[in-house]
Structure formats: structure tokens, C-alpha cells
Image (cartoon, rainbow, N blue to C red):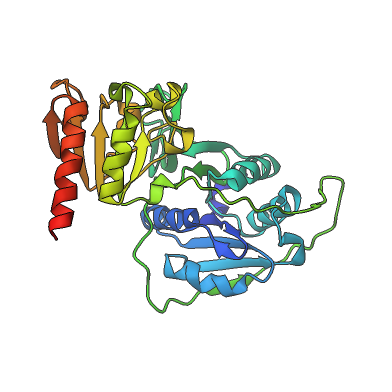
Length: 347
């Protein structure tokens, strides 16, 4: 494999029902950073049926080029035709880096593609950067430059691993939604569109979709919330989470939690923040009864304002908090809720 032939940062632009998923814009934001370090371009791979009109939207969020594969075979997501299209693009254009969102689709598609093009895949990444590998020089071993360093939680979130793929291309990763930031939208951006179609022929790997049933999920996506009221083990019980729900209600926010609260059965997995949960960036993040272990902090430390409430004045959460209150949350939270209610009523 001639590594020098591989150039460019590519992202899989996931779309569902001809609407681009937000993870695609997040990937473009990170791809712009990586491409700048490598002095190369960002290309989005857009697959579907009747999707060409979406290309300008990708350009508005940072895509220099958009490779469009538009075919009826791609109307609904199926592993085989999508994998065939992505691998055909990789073999034709030879990208140096390929990024997927760590969504249900991305987690299904990326491993199939990496196996077919015979390269590695790092899953559920939380940090991507360009650097040297090995990270520290090892006597007698070549240190390679301009490598994609892919960082992800390992061993159930108890440690962090940085992984590279120095000997194969493309370097491939899936990225957790909510971790990367999209750029400000570029008004009037027009895509440089490349139409590509490898042709599709059904084989024994194809599945037949009998029906598509859309389920309305009443669970709120906390990664999109502007205000989050999060509780941890210190909240004490599922019943006590009612106080947090009341505070979130008067603030117009949502309730989140640490892994400890989920493991205790007080909240559900969709509300979990941290390495094994979701990464969030709200304007205001209340950390109530949360000790501040690194596994949790890594999922919320980019919040604009962090307010911690904890009876332990030595809790690590105070090290990252902008404002801290030491005391009994069962007294502080209802009092805070009442004060906010009165202030809103006065207005």
C-alpha cells in the first residue's frame, strides 16, 4: 500500500428521510480542523435517493466537495448497498481519513467498510487530532508524523486509549454524537458536487425491507438542551429526582444524570452524561449530587456555565464548576426552584 496516494478528509454524511443528521455537521466541523493541519480538503459522501439537493447544506457547514451517490437502491438504509457505495468511493478517490458518526447506522456501516478496504477502525472516539505516533519516541522504532490520533474510552470508561493506524489507509473512526462542534453556517455556500455511482446489483447480502414503522420517541435528546439539571448518586433516590425535574421545569431545561444514577435505576440510559453516556454542551449545567469523576466530567466540561451543588466541599466537581454551593441538596434545590418561580412571576 502506497500511503502517499491517500489524500483528503472524508466524512459519511448520514441522512434519514432526506434530512441530514446533525452528526454530519459535527463531523464536518472536526474534519475542517484535521484538514487544516494536513493542508488538504474536506469531502462529504452523501448517499441516498433524490438527495443531490442536500449538497449545498453540507457545503454550508464546511464541505469543500460533496460526492453524491444517488440511486433508488439507497432510498432506505441497508448495509450492503451502502457499504458497496462507500468502499467504491474509497477505492476510487483514496481518502487519507474517513469519519462516521457513532450512530446506529454508522456503527453498522463503518466496520463493514473498514474490513472490505482492509484497514483499521477506532470506534466511539471522543477526541481526534493530528500528531506523531508513537506519542513518545521509542528507541529503535520510527516515529511517524501527521497521523490521526484517535482517543476513546476503554475498559468501560475506566481509562482512555489513544489509537493510531500508521501502516494502513484510510484511517477510519466513528465519532460520538455531541462531542465535536459544527462550524457557523456559511451563508450562500455552494457545493462542488461530484456525481458518482458504482452501480448496484443485488446479491445474497441484500435484505428485503418489508415495512418501515416509525416510532414516536418521547425521550428528549439531552445533547440538544440549552439547560440541563443533572443528578448523581448524591441525590439519594428516584423520588428525590422529582426535585430536579421541578427545577428543570421552571428553568425550561431537561433532566440528566450520571452513570451512578442510571445504574441505580433512578433515570434511564438516554439521560446519562459521560464517557459511557452522552456528551453535552448546554449553556447552563447543574451538577447536583455528582462527585465529578473524570468519566462524567469528560461529557459535560465544555458547558458554558457549570453550577455544582454538593455537601462534600472536597468533591472534584468543584474544580470544574464556575459556581459551587456546599450544602444539603434536599434543602438547596427546592429553595432555588422557589426563588426562580417568584422571579419569573414578578416579571
